[in-house]
Length: 217
Image (cartoon, rainbow, N blue to C red; front, side, top):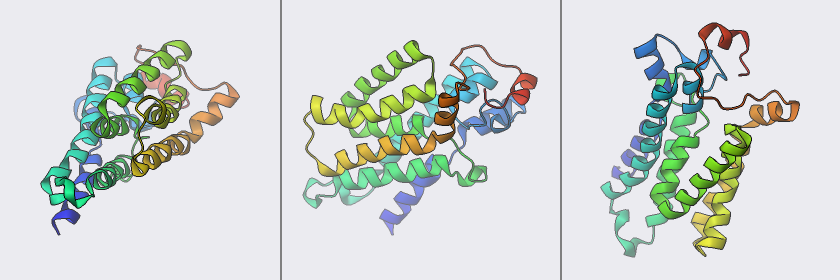
């Protein structure tokens, strides 16, 4: 029962709709109705500005990180059980599902990039820092957050295998699943990238009216 409660707690933690609550409480705006329509940090920057967007990003990262750390409320932290990494992954997936399908926001969440960042940082902090660096360089070069997120997602399993020589099959499998998940959650972005309609990242806040006129931005 304790383990079930911990997994449920990870899902509920991931379900906290940070961008939606920040928008509604402080600005009277549902960010899902403006900009790209995504309940994430990037769209929060587009709609509300830099400071709210960074705040949303930090909280969402913490959601993923703390969800994995819930492991220590169970007996799986004992090495001899052999379930340490597997239960960590399970909790991370629960938090990710909570973010994508949040029970507190009509199951309309974000793509989960920030939450995944927190999850993988809890799993392997050094590899995560390298992947984060790859993401930053990609954003600076392309100015496409969506494309950079997919590139970072596919770089994670490669960094684990070729840089840190990771051999844990569960962790490697999880990393590749995350890479594929990035493609799944960015389907609309991929379509816009192919059509040349994907908006580029900008620190300038877009007005409410312009966001409504062009929902793809």
